[in-house]
Length: 110
Length: 115
Image (cartoon, rainbow over all chains, first blue to last red; front, side, top):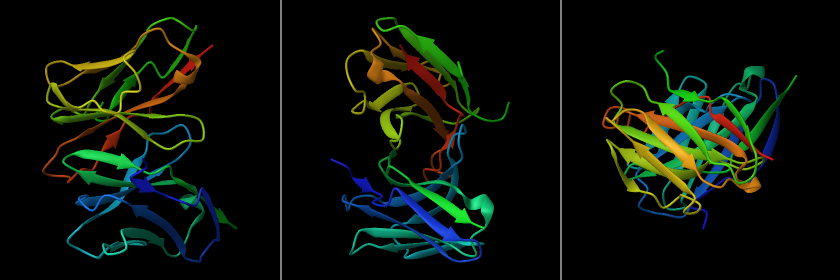
């Protein structure tokens, strides 16, 4: 039973445009959500997070939106840059157990 | 170093052999996690330690997998009688809970290949 789902295995976006990565979850008890970025042969690195009591968190080019009623969150990257090409993992936390989705590979096209 | 350190970075073993993977978390981090990423798959939760105890072992795939943590620091993941389906990158992460609200700091992983 996959509690955190990223239904798009890959996404291609033109440089300078907005990248939108989506994530759905099934467990309404999750209280914190995180996005991680992973380059090949490296461990994932933390990008941005959001508490379940908020609906938006912004950090520079990155914004995460949370829709609790729909159990959906999204990561917006604008403007997209070549260095943003990576695999992005959505994760959810409850009682210190952090569950990851399968990831979405983002390709930024020149 | 200041980050999470994992060893070995690469391990090739024969089916049926035992392997040990080691993780040195960031100093002072109380929580330690093991995940595995098989080819083309996401991060699969294996086990989580708070201090030396493991409140959640639900992710361990079988009884061939075990993990321990000593002194609230170093952790070892042991796989007995390895099988080809155990081939994956095993990632360790640590966290200072309460400050980072679940932010995990990952090591670079140990790539295991079972022939």
